[in-house]
Image 1 (cartoon, helix red, strand yellow):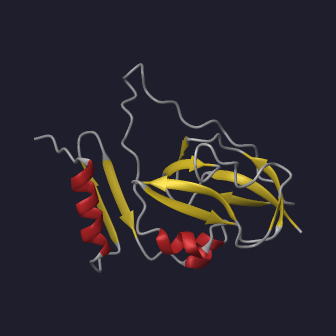
Image 2 (cartoon, one colour):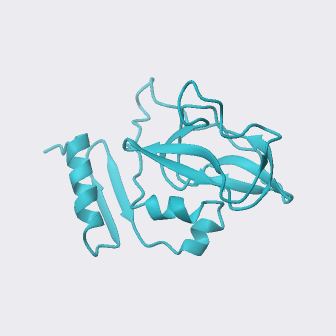
Length: 166
């Protein structure tokens, strides 16, 4: 029997898990895999450049559906990111979602390459399950790279931008 999980069922399941004491949960179907892990150490998440506000809004991590590699229309993986630099800090995605550079389509981006930012300043938005999660800078500095195009899906831990601390 194939298991189907629609958006409403997924939302109810995640809500039920959020209200429970369950720390780790895995559910697999023929065409999807759902993994939820909670209460990750904040230090390990914050060291990846994620604000504590974003961590507070992160209830779970959802993995995207598996791609059938026999399908010729399969989605290609994100392009490789250049090796990490030691003189910059990376802001990474704390969850799977869609990356937005501005608060609305007609608004200017939160930051541009060369922008001076301060700790606590919003640098982008990640949309996950219709929730807009603002990511804030952990340090003051200068934006030296923005690696993701506006409106692009991102994966957990993917590098979004690099900041040269001041």
